[in-house]
Length: 266
Image 1 (cartoon, rainbow, N blue to C red):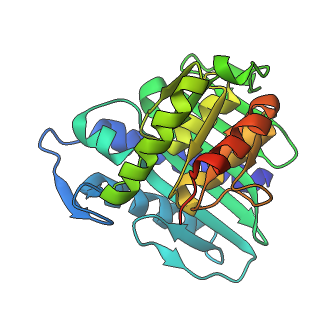
Image 2: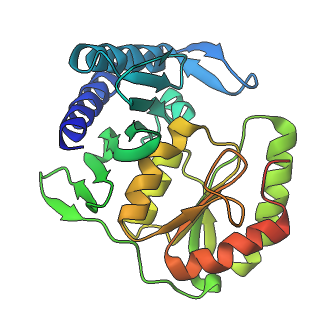
């Protein structure tokens, strides 16, 4: 894991520099995915190529799963799960809440996670069983710990919305019913950052429906290693149906409430 962490940190830093410094003024949509508003830019593609080329150079026998189509088999037992630009719509509009997310799985279990947040000047990372850390813009590195659990009605919860209209409508109804029971809801636009914000105590919890493995892998490990609980529907791991991460006391109340409100994918 130590070697994998070093590689992930370097790959994420290189992609972050490319995305921050190379964004063209006339950045446009290169393609769409699940709907006309689920976009890919030329910079998503360029960042994924940079990362996958770097991984192939350093670890040629590893498998790679990338959001923008990079899916290669390997023989080493290690698989990289890459989101080259989490928060593409934010990036397209010039908003700062976007990140590079890279995780390494060993024999199917996430062992390393790195989330690079260039516009904050922050890097968050975790190694399974080794805790979670954040390096700030001034170079200071500090441990990440989730907040002590407040009552649910004082909890600040992050979420996100899908790009398929009927799913968004259902998610909005869940949020409408949930928000009177919370301090408030935040919608940042990057699952990886939201999970890191749970880890660092900037959110009490987070939930979302419809995430991909690349959205979750690194950030979920970071949140867990910072003391948060993570999961999906009760008794299941976080997945595309539902992902929940929160400080333990909030998680124990939020997860069953989301189940009651029908926040999962059906």
